[in-house]
Image 1 (spheres, rainbow, N blue to C red):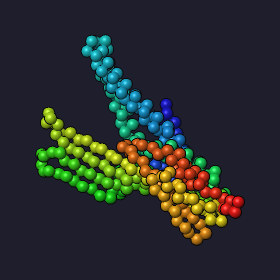
Image 2 (image 1 turned 180 degrees about the horizontal axis):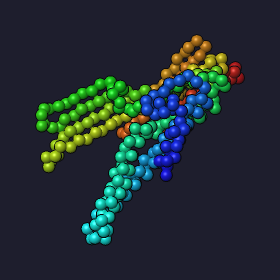
Image 3 (image 1 turned 90 degrees about the vertical axis):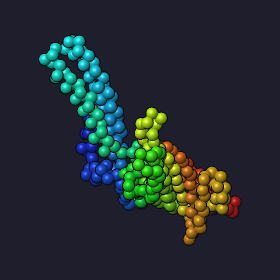
Image 4 (image 1 turned 30 degrees about the horizontal axis):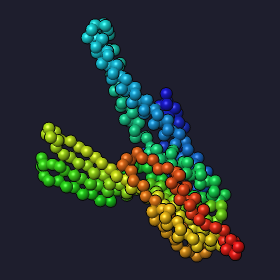
Length: 298
């Protein structure tokens, strides 16, 4: 059972890794290999925990179905009256206990972006990083709608026992960023932040029942920028990237030229997962557009 595997992996984690599970936020300035070594066991634990919680859900549903079967057997006197109480107690404990265990383990569950986006992305970036250099890294998986990330709220309340009532909450979630020096002397920066709008509606149905509905809209902003040495790369044609992204930024700095590309993605679920290929694709487009500086005189 994957639940036992998850528990073994949890107890094998360091105190710092367990602290990340409870707090959900971590920032550091360390070599990428150290960051990956810290996150990889967490990703493995989270994978087994998700599978274990799915198994508990199935066991819980099976236990409740079995309780109905046992109740029918007791009514038909298939199970002796002396054993009826024990049999019903066991199946109900199996069903309800599984649901309770699944709910309790939910506090340890981390967003799937950790193992499906962050770790694969860092593995890819590590290959192009300058050896011996640190990466400035920040990860925030506390949740897109936690109170500390709320930037505004609005309530449309027509009064007592009058409907519909509408509450709108806006959040800003800066949940991923990394800055890394590459082997060619360039500096790479990747950020992902989400604008979240959550609407909670209370209304009365035709039958007179009070109902509740929650909708969420997430607009993800994915940005990748490369600050490249002008003596190494020719970036005079950077403007051609304008059609390959939603927003393009080109800045001339001292002996460097920074090219930044931004794309926006829309989703309607907090569980939606970012694809590493989105960030890597932006970086690839910038590099493909840059030509070696020596090609100028060719």
